[in-house]
Image (cartoon, rainbow, N blue to C red; front, side, top):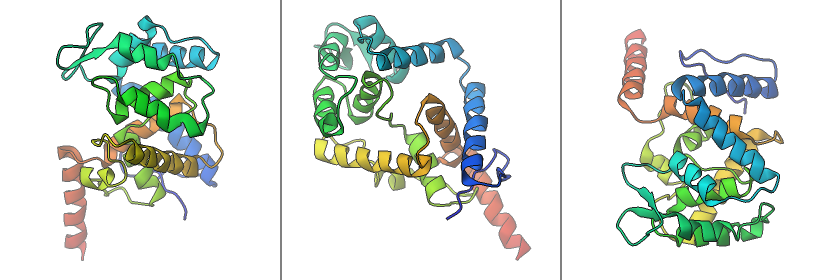
Length: 239
């Protein structure tokens, strides 16, 4: 199946080969990411942490706090050394777990690492996978719902007027569950989607950024719903 990629106006990204189309897609939406997220300094910090960790530098408390502030929604959680209060993440507790995750951790140990992270107060599946991502220097992909939506659209060959509803995505990744067996299966499925799409291409931060940006075009929101309704309405009028 020929994979199609769309610009934000609905026009198709054209190139002779799938490899060229994919690269044009990544280059465009990686740049577009910085149009949406203009905190360039924070992004540079994240990339520095990943690069340093890939080279073997340990994650210390200050670095872990930066990671958590980048990922954790401050409306729901705050960071503190004291994990006894409600909705407070204990940095010290999480740090003790990250110290035991080797940068070269093997795939058969991933489920155990995610389980240990989820045993920390306030850490669910998505946060655990994000911390794992940094612990491994980016070797094991981060999970994000918008990136997942993008992969579903691309790998299933959907057109520009498609939307991926939350229930549909949650059937592939049960992020609200605490069952490690389910999370491990879901994570393997998601990384399988990513590997299938990359087709041997090296995974890196630019790919995360491009997929995250693209996924916003196909998620359920007012703007996208209106776009798809207009397209459907116009098609009926043409008939």
